[in-house]
Image: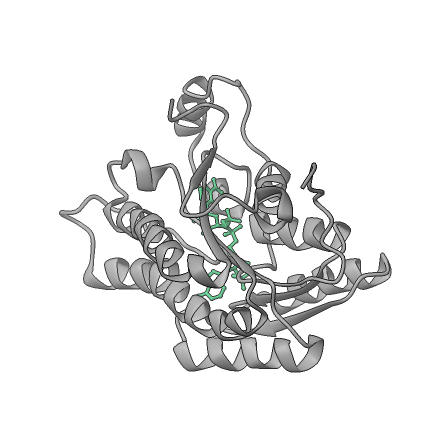
Length: 252
Ligand code: NAP
């Protein structure tokens, strides 16, 4: 079959949490690769509009939806609207996520629930909605934004680590369910990436992270977007149920 390309012309992608950080980079790169891109966001409407504007000004097609990822009914509504507007859905990137760090002794029930709901339930919501059009098309790629914390664990992040490990197990299970329909489901496990999410970390923690990263630099959102393009494209057509670490070697 020869070497496959990363060309996404004619494909339609949906990225949750596409207004900032990693999700924004993914949306922009998917568009550069040729895809029509829909993004969701929780509250940053100006930032989301800016992402759409950037894509449209470069000649691409994009749309933004304000949609809290924990809302099951809204996820179905968004996916149905994407299919109505653009005729299909080929790529789903479950990227929306938050941290609410605390040691278990201090962690509140609200902190536990909001991280599990935002990071994990959202993946159920959007995957369940997206597989309908993907099954009709007999093709699709679902990409779940996990974290190396979901593999290694981290003190102060029991809620986040559990949500991210849950995403990996969810991906493997869904990959087995949907392989016969030619829908692939994979995860990406980023290490430390420079975004608003990691902006909150203090200098000492940052230094520790850098020295624990063999490649010696923090990751950039584009490092993750590159892996997404690979998993979204036919270049990865024999890969499903996999987790790709993009972490500068941190979790070796
Ligand atoms: P970020 O800069 O904080 O951006 C988060 C994005 O998710 C924003 O677009 C935000 O929308 C959206 N979002 C948050 N809660 C949402 C909700 N309830 N419903 C819909 N959208 C919601 O985070 P990031 O660093 O880019 O992280 C993106 C993903 O990568 C997350 O899943 C994160 O866990 C994962 N990750 C990040 C790192 C890292 O080092 N940065 C490492 C490993 C994994 P608004 O703009 O409206 O708030």
